[in-house]
Image (cartoon, rainbow, N blue to C red; front, side):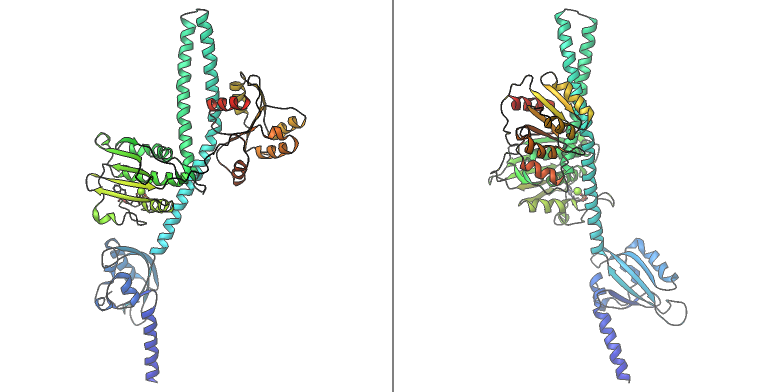
Amino acid sequence: MVSRLEEQIRELRAALEDAAEGICRLDGAGRIVTVNRAFSRLFGIPADQAPGRAWEALLIEEERAAARADLASAAGRLERERTGVRSDGTTFPLQLIAVPLAGGGRPGSNGHYLYVHDLSDRKRMENQLIFAGRMAAVGTLAAGVAHEINNPLAYIVANIDFARSQINSVASRLSRAAVGGGPAHVLDETGEALTEARQGAERVRNIVRDLRVFARGDDDQSGPVSVRRVLDSSLNIAWNEIRHRARLVKDYGEMPLVEANESRLGQVFLNLLLNAAHAIPEGEAERNELRVTTRTDAQGRAVLEVRDTGMGIPPENRERIFDPFFTTKPVGEGTGLGLWICHGIVSALGGEVTVESEIGRGSTFRVTLPPALMDAPATFSTPTIPEVEARGARLLVVDDEPMILGALRRSLGGDYNVTCVGDGRRALERLRAGERFDVILCDLMMPELTGMDLYAELERIAPDQAGRMVFVSGGAFTPRAREFLERVPNARVEKPIDFQNLRLLLRNLSH
Ligand SMILES: Nc1ncnc2c1ncn2[C@@H]1O[C@H](COP(=O)(O)OP(=O)(O)OP(=O)(O)O)[C@@H](O)[C@H]1O
Ligand SMILES: [Mg+2]
């Protein structure tokens, strides 16, 4: 009978010893009596050195008093999330369950059983989700904002250009009539104001372009990418963080295109630039330098360096900065995922990230990427459109945004015979009825009948007219739109429309 009981106790003990959770028995004074294997592994304390220790010393200093109070006051089972300290001083999140031992007196006066579960993996996953969510949110937001700004910007620019050209022609007529003084002066001033307004609009256009680099976050497309262009976009986005801290020096040498995804590459550069900026205290911009260098190495690879004159990285951290969650920034300011992600993205492209650093003098991060294999360039295929007389060429503009139509009519009306319609259906009606155009400038995405639908219809009923379509797109492509644009040879124009380029394109198309 006794030996049966002993056997059961032995079995139970073995089961506890091998449990995956850390288990520990405490006496009534909160001192450790025994621990199982998992417990000693979790905290890095050999099982024979555990007994006699005060259990709360296994938690970080700040949590000890509260943890002690918890055990003293709890009448039953208690569950908490706390931060454990390993014997090497590193910390980890843990879940703690304390169960008072049965017996006489106050609960727990006989001691407790503690069950400890390591939450590191779960926290890591949670953080990763938060980070991924943040990136996705930024991407979606940027795409939305860029898209919303594009249309109004297009007609702001077009109308300013129109007003400027009107003013110029009035001014030259006035000067020919030699009416000096008042009106000419007013016209000069107005022309200047418009020129400044145009410059402002140009800056907004650049911001939108930069945003779009980051907006394509969930888009896996990769292709030959200009590192310098992506770098410039990243610099613009980071500029607010840089300008109070350092002079920016661009040292751009020749470098090959690389095969990459723009937004991923943008993420890499942005993080390197922000890290460099954050290594320099604010307010000493004149005494500090952030230098970005591009060049080609002996093997023909693209090399980009971000060099700062910031605080540098201590040698003991150098091995760890690429680890996920390693950060020296305060909680809430850095996730410690930046360099880890950079490393992941660059490695996937067959490249590498290296670092050199000296305490107090600064750091240099170097990204090396293999050159793109350039066998299929032609992103813009040459459209095949028969020659026609440019002046008076008939131009059909299809766009569901009335202001865009107005701006296009005004700015192109002088050179072309422009017909504007507000939706694809109406365009189709006119073409069905037999009207013909030299160029059809058509918005790709419209409610009801899209530019793609119109193209498909025209291919059937008037293939010649389908070939004369030029697609205007807002940049936020649906998979269908992307597939479509890859398939058809027609020329395309991106919003915000650059009217100078558009005019060139139209001249080429209609010549
Ligand atoms: N240019 C630099 N100068 C000095 N220290 C740097 C530099 N770049 C990175 N570090 C160090 O490497 C750590 C990890 O960088 P990483 O980009 O991975 O994360 P983070 O910048 O802390 O957080 P997040 O990128 O989420 O903002 C930083 O906390 C910092 O200690
Ligand atoms: Mg960072």
